Length: 77
Image 1 (cartoon, rainbow, N blue to C red):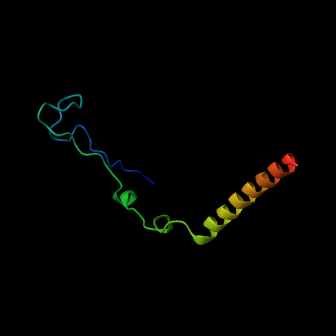
Image 2 (cartoon, one colour):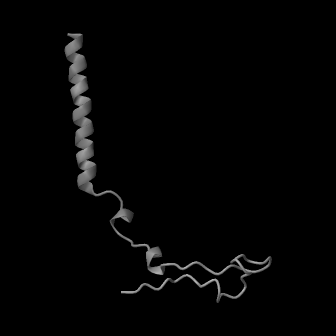
């Protein structure tokens, strides 16, 4: 399987000086690109957090706070 480079050949590209430099006032050749890589998919990340992860985080925070509240009460008495 042979691979063909999408980059232009410096010998056959117009607007290039010998050695591949670009003269003042000329626009260099565009880079090859993958337009399909720029497609932005719309998915779950734009819908925000789900109810289950938020509920789990809330439960963990409440348990964490309750543990230290009970610990502080035990130290006081």
